[in-house]
Length: 416
Image (cartoon, rainbow, N blue to C red):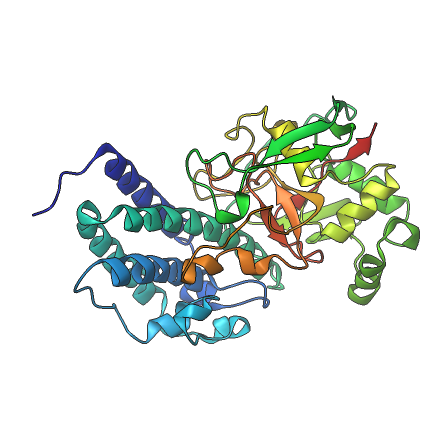
């Protein structure tokens, strides 16, 4: 007999339903071809995101915690496992665009099958299994952001540069005030997750760290300020760049943020609403760590450490700023620029490494974050494509220093 559903279960059930519905809404306008193509090895087809997040729930919850559950299709784990070595062989990441079958309608049917099975199972799931459902929801929110940014990259590769959504008509943005600076006296601070509520494993343990006296900019760098960096020869002057960054600039022919083009009427950018003029008041985005570090050097500043960023962000509301609530045009806006949460991910100067005392969990889910703690840099704060409620002050995102197809920007720091 099913046990009574507690308030915690009801909340989890509602969260699961909301997350699963948003993923479908983000793909409502896609054809099967749109959802199948892979535009680069770092991106995944929309159809694969829909199936992989479903595989996560089917594998780690239904298969492992629901007696008698049978896989929807026992061939599909090979297709939709991402990087879990403990789950065996899998289709190569850079070949995901070759999965023409199952088609989009079959993947949607797979989602419906797993959703129904999990809804039936939820009242009887153990605490450990419910924790995996919560993890799966946060995991899917991460994939929702990747899905959005992968779609932008996909459509940018089409010579027609099609718009997925009609443009949102906005009036001219007011230019923000000159950058202000928030001082911090330094000293010992505590950072990392405090154990209250959900967090990914890489966000802890909470620990003490020493900060030097410093200042943090009260807003992120704007497109207009970035255009000045370009006009001043920022991409042509090696003295601003790290050696690896300068090698990357020359090898890739980088002259501006990703999706920017210069024409007779100035700079334009590409987004889900097609190609539009660059808003000089909005925060710059789609820049790599290399570009962010070069701009900071040019501006006579530096990138903040992740501990500095967190010490300042702990004073703000994580629900502030522009974050993703529904499907539609997703683009940073100037109005939220003073916020430290949402709008654009902010590069820090900190390498993505484990905190003191970090231990990966046992089993396949222990592969979630820990094994990627090499060669990447930490970003903080979330973006306009991050689902609302997903981030917190201690949240650690991470990418390789050359990657820039995410909504990545920067906030300057200085030493006192």
